[in-house]
Image (cartoon, rainbow over all chains, first blue to last red; front, top):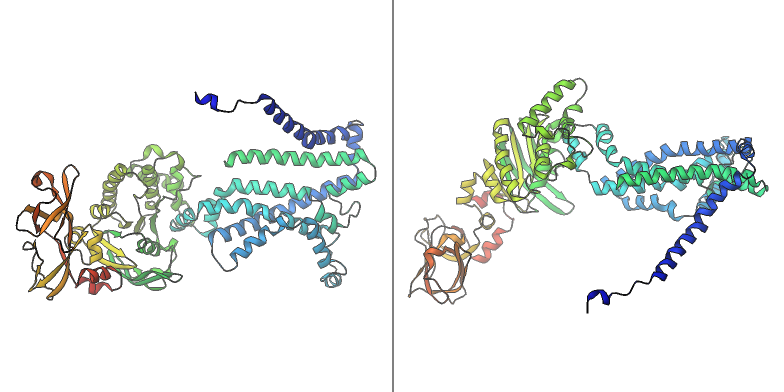
Length: 273
Length: 365
């Protein structure tokens, strides 16, 4: 008896069944909806599509979403690097606690974050009266949207950079120190080049999330038309207004951003490994 | 121009790592810190470098207090065990790093830096590697680049942590000779850490044997080899046979052993322990001797034998096989000790003495 006869005979039918199932699921869960977005958006011709995109409220939503992404990215990068560096290079009381706090937003539903901001900064909230007295507008305005987006996207950069920094250790930085480099020189010329790909990857993930965030932002923005509507909120609004083409036009814009980000992420993943 | 270390102590949490280190390294000297892992040798090196800080004690170079200076201000060259080369820079940029981070006022010009790097590449015999990245180099080549990077800033002291630890045996032997040559022609003061006795002895002018945070012995390699100062050093240097003997008027005595070849020692009468290498025993067939061969195994050139005297004394010896044809299991043998080191106290207390509990002065008595 040869070993080959001991192996189970490959069952072609089972193989094809499983492959077919996977393809069907991918098609109906991912591909078809995505294609459908663009198809519906362009269903009444490009002119109508352009007209919908260029509608003042939609344009404003695109602008607002971009603004939120542009403001949150540098903050996320700075805080993420600082936190990862602190945790990877130093032992101090509260290190574990800091690690947990950084990961907290991952485990909390964004809508809860939004509600917390509402209860804290709202008119009837804990800090509400003080803010109103100082004429500081946080809720239902850009600051609130930026803050809650920061809350939701906070963990991404640190989570990407930290494992790499821990794996690399601090010997290169120590070497640079003995060679006479200052703290800033060590950071720019040794630390940063070593974490650059993880940093970019974290930035891409954080930005994708910032652009697409719905739950937390919908609570704190107050959904004021033409003022505090981000792109995801605008899509829902248009959809509820039964402006299907408008909703899909806005959605296709957001999807396009997401696809670009996805391609970026894949490229970066290939480079880090 | 010397490096002076006095009463240096360091603990990590509750664990003392250095317990009072006194050492002076002279200008141009090549010193090895030798000891098993956990002896504190690397911690001592890192404190000299300014990468770690002592809890007590002093460190000065040429009269200047180095504990008041940062690692960058001390201008030392540190070669890490795993080299810690910058992976995103070419060999040339790695070596130039220390010069390019100098303050603008004292930074040499681009051409001058390039000339310095070229000189070092030639000196280290790695001219062809200038434009490679560290990932494209072998272990031995990385070692040379790491040394070049450290030497580019013309360090006052060159510090190497297990410089050959990550290399295979042949490369290790070659680099050892090469490093000695580099040290001699560059004239820097060099301190390196190793756990390899052969490496320390072959390379260093002076060897500092460390154990448990103490210095056990400081001396020239031959001095330490011939006269280990403590039971620990004796064991560490391969004097693995320990025999209980009795001291009488400066002479060691033991039943059935010929100890006449050992010199007189100024030790008090009473129990003592003789440490010796298995190769320092001659075994001769002697029907009247109390020892009998109980095991014999050949390694080719050597015959490894075990002799016992029936009262619990067991001796391992290595004799050249050519001279030991008559030795076989059961054969009564007379044992002649050619060389050895005697420490006061019985074997049990000698074992206790090997614990690092005494300061250096007593150990040297």
